[in-house]
Image 1 (spheres, rainbow, N blue to C red):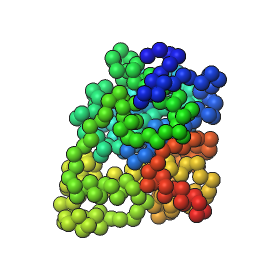
Image 2: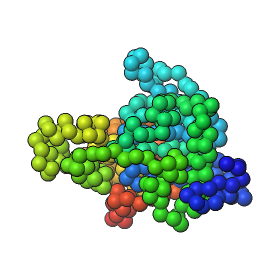
Image 3: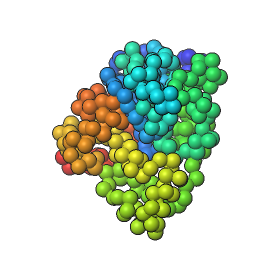
Length: 305
């Protein structure tokens, strides 16, 4: 792919003539819906973080550094050695640290219940941690990520991007969906559309006509993670729809379903490796794109405040 010209979903993209330095605030952009997140923004001084989705970190300039927990070897993320990479993969629920000398870092998040993990690209499935630079898919992926970043920064408000377009543009292929029992899919749709809801597992079991124990077993078997863990992740993920709000964080905590600011702060720090106030401070000049029921709920909350 020539450096001067990229193609994204049939759109020919030339890098802007201003050739913005990565530190320029206009480079900070996030696109998200219920299924995917594309984030190009500030990283901050993160501690260990544990995300519930598949993560792909990509360098937009200087290499990034990553350290993953190795549970089988008894090595925590805090003790794991740093490894340099242009591209790195972190599977769901793996504690890790990430750092970058650039002001900007890029990450892509794939919700685990939306994809058949056995059909993910081999470089995603087989390379937790740094993806070898020699891997034949590494450079094309980096080029697609950087083209997508340019497109989102310059044209992202003009075209409605859907999950299928996102996957084709970023991964060069559709990502096969996970086949899920219809009863569990019903619960997932509700959880994804309204992560702040206070519905319990007992409520969900009754709604789909299953006993409590059967529901918990089937949910984990179908989704690959326990109900409570996924609900915690979805709630923390929904915070991304609110990060540009100029409001009291207690209001954000309540709007996203947390009972109080203590639970909110603990959960967000465990997931993102940052205190909520630091996460919001680093997002003040972030352009947020995309649409979903959760995004619209965040907009209503902002308007109401």
